[in-house]
Length: 164
Image (cartoon, rainbow, N blue to C red):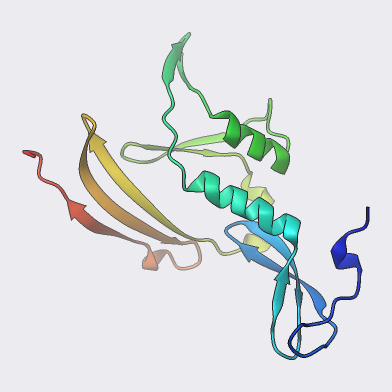
Protein backbone atom coordinates (compact mmCIF):
# COMPACT_ATOMS: atom_id res chain seq x y z
CA UNK A 1 0.00 0.00 0.00
CA UNK A 2 1.37 3.43 -0.89
CA UNK A 3 1.46 6.35 1.49
CA UNK A 4 -0.85 9.26 0.68
CA UNK A 5 2.04 11.71 1.18
CA UNK A 6 3.96 10.05 -1.69
CA UNK A 7 1.47 11.65 -4.11
CA UNK A 8 1.31 15.25 -5.26
CA UNK A 9 -1.17 17.17 -3.12
CA UNK A 10 -2.48 20.61 -4.05
CA UNK A 11 -3.53 23.23 -1.52
CA UNK A 12 -7.31 23.52 -1.28
CA UNK A 13 -7.09 27.32 -0.92
CA UNK A 14 -4.67 28.37 -3.68
CA UNK A 15 -4.20 25.23 -5.81
CA UNK A 16 -0.39 25.23 -5.33
CA UNK A 17 1.69 22.08 -4.81
CA UNK A 18 2.32 21.46 -1.09
CA UNK A 19 5.82 20.59 0.17
CA UNK A 20 6.77 18.08 2.90
CA UNK A 21 7.81 19.38 6.33
CA UNK A 22 8.25 18.06 9.86
CA UNK A 23 6.88 19.58 13.06
CA UNK A 24 7.84 18.74 16.62
CA UNK A 25 5.00 18.73 19.15
CA UNK A 26 5.37 17.40 22.72
CA UNK A 27 8.28 15.17 21.71
CA UNK A 28 6.52 13.83 18.60
CA UNK A 29 7.85 14.44 15.10
CA UNK A 30 4.80 14.97 12.90
CA UNK A 31 5.06 14.69 9.13
CA UNK A 32 3.10 17.34 7.27
CA UNK A 33 2.57 19.05 3.95
CA UNK A 34 2.75 22.86 3.85
CA UNK A 35 1.64 25.37 1.24
CA UNK A 36 4.34 28.00 0.71
CA UNK A 37 1.79 30.54 -0.47
CA UNK A 38 -0.92 30.51 2.24
CA UNK A 39 0.83 28.41 4.95
CA UNK A 40 -1.95 25.79 5.00
CA UNK A 41 -0.79 22.60 6.79
CA UNK A 42 -1.91 18.99 6.47
CA UNK A 43 -0.60 16.62 9.14
CA UNK A 44 -0.08 12.99 8.16
CA UNK A 45 -3.18 11.05 9.33
CA UNK A 46 -1.13 8.25 10.96
CA UNK A 47 1.04 10.72 12.88
CA UNK A 48 -2.02 12.70 13.99
CA UNK A 49 -3.80 9.53 15.18
CA UNK A 50 -0.71 8.43 17.14
CA UNK A 51 -0.34 11.89 18.69
CA UNK A 52 -4.04 11.95 19.67
CA UNK A 53 -3.62 8.50 21.27
CA UNK A 54 -0.68 9.90 23.28
CA UNK A 55 -2.73 12.92 24.40
CA UNK A 56 -5.59 10.64 25.51
CA UNK A 57 -3.19 8.52 27.59
CA UNK A 58 -1.48 11.61 29.00
CA UNK A 59 -4.76 13.11 30.16
CA UNK A 60 -5.81 9.95 32.01
CA UNK A 61 -5.00 9.25 35.64
CA UNK A 62 -4.14 5.64 36.43
CA UNK A 63 -4.43 4.13 39.89
CA UNK A 64 -1.76 1.46 40.30
CA UNK A 65 -0.57 -0.75 43.13
CA UNK A 66 2.85 -0.72 44.71
CA UNK A 67 4.06 -4.09 46.00
CA UNK A 68 7.06 -5.35 47.93
CA UNK A 69 9.13 -7.73 45.78
CA UNK A 70 12.21 -9.00 47.60
CA UNK A 71 14.10 -5.94 48.87
CA UNK A 72 12.51 -3.58 46.34
CA UNK A 73 9.11 -2.16 45.56
CA UNK A 74 7.39 -2.79 42.24
CA UNK A 75 4.74 -0.60 40.63
CA UNK A 76 2.52 -2.02 37.94
CA UNK A 77 2.37 0.00 34.72
CA UNK A 78 -1.00 -0.19 32.91
CA UNK A 79 -1.07 -2.26 29.73
CA UNK A 80 -2.27 0.73 27.65
CA UNK A 81 0.89 2.68 28.48
CA UNK A 82 3.25 -0.25 27.89
CA UNK A 83 1.65 -1.15 24.56
CA UNK A 84 1.85 2.49 23.44
CA UNK A 85 5.52 2.73 24.49
CA UNK A 86 6.25 -0.67 22.92
CA UNK A 87 4.94 0.62 19.59
CA UNK A 88 7.26 3.64 19.89
CA UNK A 89 10.39 1.63 20.65
CA UNK A 90 11.48 -1.63 22.22
CA UNK A 91 11.37 -1.13 25.99
CA UNK A 92 10.98 -4.62 27.39
CA UNK A 93 14.10 -5.78 29.24
CA UNK A 94 15.71 -2.36 28.68
CA UNK A 95 16.99 -0.23 31.53
CA UNK A 96 14.94 2.88 32.28
CA UNK A 97 15.92 5.94 34.27
CA UNK A 98 14.13 6.40 37.59
CA UNK A 99 14.60 9.63 39.49
CA UNK A 100 13.10 11.31 42.53
CA UNK A 101 11.85 14.41 40.76
CA UNK A 102 10.13 16.26 43.58
CA UNK A 103 8.54 15.59 46.95
CA UNK A 104 6.02 12.80 46.37
CA UNK A 105 6.90 12.42 42.68
CA UNK A 106 8.98 9.78 40.90
CA UNK A 107 9.81 9.95 37.22
CA UNK A 108 10.42 7.03 34.85
CA UNK A 109 12.28 7.94 31.66
CA UNK A 110 12.31 5.44 28.80
CA UNK A 111 14.63 7.52 26.60
CA UNK A 112 18.31 8.24 27.09
CA UNK A 113 19.53 11.82 27.03
CA UNK A 114 21.51 10.75 23.94
CA UNK A 115 18.16 10.34 22.13
CA UNK A 116 17.85 14.15 22.11
CA UNK A 117 19.90 15.23 19.06
CA UNK A 118 21.39 18.72 18.97
CA UNK A 119 20.33 19.31 22.59
CA UNK A 120 16.84 20.34 21.52
CA UNK A 121 14.93 22.71 23.77
CA UNK A 122 12.16 21.26 25.91
CA UNK A 123 9.38 23.35 27.37
CA UNK A 124 7.06 21.53 29.74
CA UNK A 125 4.04 22.52 31.78
CA UNK A 126 2.90 20.16 34.49
CA UNK A 127 0.01 20.27 36.88
CA UNK A 128 0.20 18.67 40.30
CA UNK A 129 -2.48 17.83 42.81
CA UNK A 130 -1.08 16.80 46.18
CA UNK A 131 -3.31 14.42 48.11
CA UNK A 132 -3.09 13.40 51.76
CA UNK A 133 -5.40 10.71 53.13
CA UNK A 134 -7.37 10.84 49.85
CA UNK A 135 -8.08 14.55 50.35
CA UNK A 136 -6.61 17.36 48.19
CA UNK A 137 -4.05 19.45 50.05
CA UNK A 138 -2.38 21.50 47.32
CA UNK A 139 -2.90 22.25 43.62
CA UNK A 140 -0.14 23.91 41.59
CA UNK A 141 1.38 24.19 38.12
CA UNK A 142 5.05 23.94 37.19
CA UNK A 143 6.66 25.41 34.08
CA UNK A 144 10.07 24.15 32.90
CA UNK A 145 12.24 25.55 30.10
CA UNK A 146 15.44 23.61 29.33
CA UNK A 147 17.02 26.55 27.48
CA UNK A 148 16.23 29.18 30.13
CA UNK A 149 16.21 27.59 33.60
CA UNK A 150 15.73 31.02 35.19
CA UNK A 151 12.22 31.02 33.66
CA UNK A 152 11.28 27.85 35.55
CA UNK A 153 8.52 28.51 38.05
CA UNK A 154 5.81 26.91 40.11
CA UNK A 155 2.46 28.62 40.63
CA UNK A 156 0.19 27.68 43.51
CA UNK A 157 -3.36 27.60 42.16
CA UNK A 158 -5.16 26.55 45.29
CA UNK A 159 -3.91 25.84 48.78
CA UNK A 160 -6.55 23.90 50.67
CA UNK A 161 -7.06 24.00 54.44
CA UNK A 162 -6.13 20.87 56.34
CA UNK A 163 -9.21 21.18 58.56
CA UNK A 164 -11.73 20.60 55.76
